[in-house]
Length: 226
Image (cartoon, rainbow, N blue to C red; front, side, top):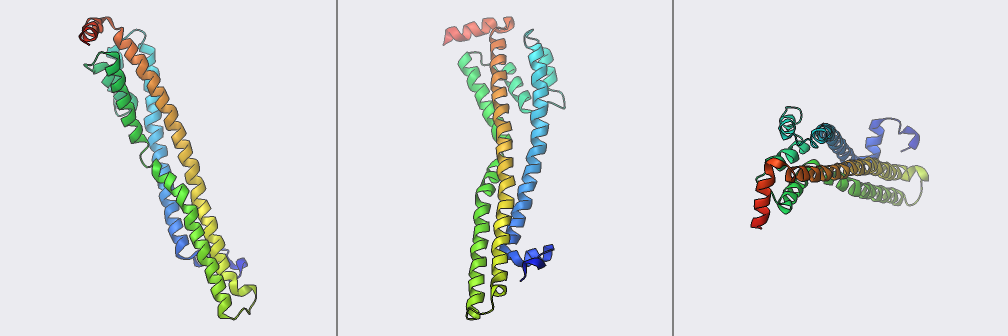
């Protein structure tokens, strides 16, 4: 096979063989995960940040009624921030340790939900170069087999098909791995930053709850009981 003939998808498929088909499938799967996580993060995290801004505006006045009402609105009710705020405000637990444990458990749960499928991107980023390398090895083996079949005669054209398979699969493996790795790091960075923001908000909520005059007597009794 002449490399100059590899000008269309049909020739590329023929050059790459079954390994290339597998890598293309993994590429499509990787892109579908990226789109899914991007839409999910844009919906959950962006709405959570808007809700956080609203909560922080009314928190100094300890207007828990307005905060609760905002968390239950349709656009924000399914966000991680709403889950955190409502659980802390409505919790029957009043000691600092109990509230901190409650906040940590909610944040960890919401973080686990948002990080769903990120491990798949990490796996694809780490394994697809090796799948491409496997295709490279198969291509080189084919090149030497073709050369051996002709007793070493025939020149470069004899090994061209095997070398083409090797190079195409190497490139395809990197083509899948690099975007998956970039996307994984991007989503992980956004998630870590969001978790930190949730932690800060939880501390602000706990502080406001513990200094709320309506709850102060209950808090004092709970602490005395400890």
